[in-house]
Image 1: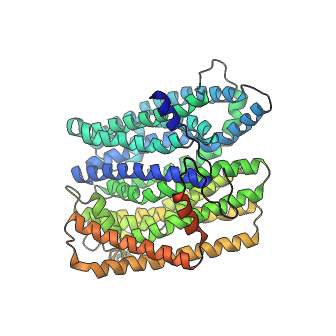
Image 2: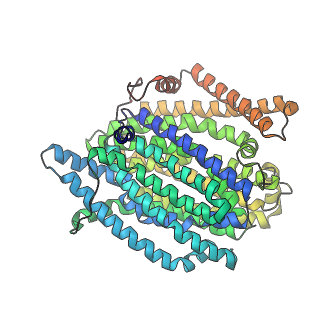
Image 3: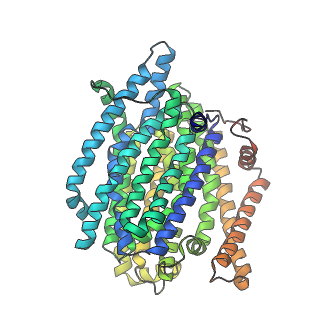
Length: 566
């Protein structure tokens, strides 16, 4: 039994599309668990002071992970692992083991000390992240945040360990780990919440992080790469890793600062604003996690290896191929979610304590988040493209400007909403928020989308200055992406017309009536999208169907021109 589990979690994945498909399939399952979790929280507790505290408790632990945990993350370590693996092939035995033991030792001691220090400072830190909270909320926030510090420690260690498995094309454990994480939180909501309140949900978060870590171990057992603590650290090697990863760490920290800033602003708005923002982001984040991260993670080792071998043309081909894949999936999803936003929110969250006022706020926020779904996915890919070429400072600089722009946009939009009557009436009418309390929170989603879109465009432009661009390939890519965007807009129109056509023929006060109406509109929209691309001769349709048909555990899916195996 144990050997079968080890074999299952240590399966090899052959091509980039197979790796992305494996990651995407388990991302879907994980997101289903996550959405069920959110529905239970929204229906049982509802957006308000209690849920605001719970979501705010993630801010400092997440920042800690992105400030130190990513010093030894997958995107940083893979180039080093590839280098030491090559040295072992050349006869230098033990080099990879030596590297693994050193980075693991430094991470465990360093992250452990940092968690203790942050726990002691937590009462002061929470006043910065949630200045609008009451004294009682602040006390609870400190307790929850301290407990959640266990999670970044385990996540960082998991990321460190999984990098060795990914280099060996063992993506399965990494892909399934988020499923276990959300299963842990769901256990907290279902089993612990009735007995311990929100503290039970926090314990579920810790349980999920523990499961996330345990899942990473089987591939390392098979590869015989279980790390060991060492008494003498090779600080010269560690400095080399930190020199490369420091910009990555700062960049991740800046991204997390965006959420801290937005949460701080939201805490000063109407009660429940943090909950509304987070619930909407979780819904919008589903396609990002399923497609954006899946393809970015799958493409990174191929880009890193190609660049190390001096094949810049291959880096460009992988980048363009992955860009097409990301647009192919996220464009229609984004447009259809904008059209179906109210239906999506009512199906996923509309029950119990989740009111109609909450529904309208979350739906408007989802629509504004969806404006940047594709941009957010591209940021994940483009940042990894820079890392693959050894440039970690450029994305940091661009991200710094994006964070500053997001913060400025958030403050400006919220101020304008409250002080410029014409702007408020225009936005309320456009987003159907007339008579809704706390409408200013949706502007935070718009500010986030503005920052992410600028970030993606700036990264794309800069990355092309590092890689020689073949104009025919660039022109082909531009034409293909324009076809996808046009098809996505038409598909959204078809979905909207379907909603109007169904109209009152279904009971829109019932779950199944809303679900069936949205389902039919979604099928029609995707059918129109695929049909248009098929008529235009788009090869992504053929590649996607071929990948689905392949038995990716044993057979190779068809490759298209310019695509290479991992």
